[in-house]
Length: 347
Image (cartoon, rainbow, N blue to C red; front, side, top):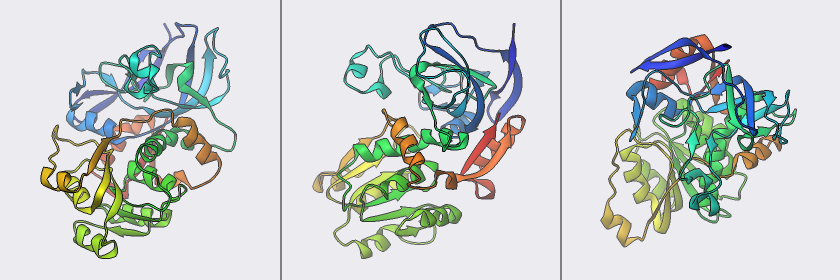
């Protein structure tokens, strides 16, 4: 039996290298991928530090990771989209293509969806090899690096959130939280005709990164009154707010920043199972709250934007680690140390 190395969660804040069976092609549409790079996501860190996200509870040992890129090693007999040697980005979700949600074009809420690095569904990609279905493999041109291919995963979430929100031409919006997801909203938003973008975060270096990426205004809620400062500039308030940090105080700020009929796009993953909203504020101004669940058919648009050089998605990468140092990467991201925004792990 062939084996490979994988970094596996073995307990709360415990991750270790293990030797596990190398996956094999079992179905005609399977693709065997030699992993090259993995981006560390906030959801991975939730599993590392708390062992769960809501009802999704880790059963140890478990391999995390869902932001990945690699090189095709082998393909099943029915595969035509990619071939051995192709460099690919990976869509982490595998829908059934048959349920009511898939038929409605909502493959991201497929009744039978399996997702990379999601407990009870599929082991993650923080390993030397991975098998995915053909439909989850996106070949990339030479102009796109493997890092950029991996970053297309968070970027595709931002693009989906933007498409799901409001007509963006001339819109004035806020992004609360300037980590990888906030930046993945900001960068494509600036190419979609928005008039003004206000960005907040509690970490100054993330605000500096947002400013360099093109944010019109940035603010730190630990140092200033975000609502008062933005309202002074936008007395009629904002068309949409993208909550990208999963914090109660940000949800409170979002409602106060939205104009009547405004839309709150909730993308952040809260640590607590419940977030509270002031229903009086929401009702009187007819505020709409829209949850954003991962990405929906937006990986290719993300890759197209990267290839077009509309912005530099690499700007969010601040640190990188070899596979054997994954524990240090998880710990750094969990504790927001050393100005980390996105940590990449080289396989």
